[in-house]
Image (cartoon, one colour):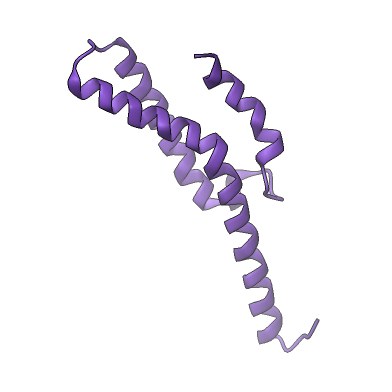
Length: 99
């Protein structure tokens, strides 16, 4: 249970994006709202009886919770950086500006 809180301490070291605001990061918005839904699902599953479907759902929701902080945040930052560089190079090529 302490790992769920400690995993948030990893964020400053694994964040690879240059933009801190999520207004210009639509991919991150999607995964963020999935995290909110996952958090609500974990709260609901936590009070449910220990039976077969709730055990599997709880494990899957926990995997997404931890993978969001450890895997998805760095991956989204890298994807966003590559897309920005690609767009910048494409824009410079159209305007006939060579770097």
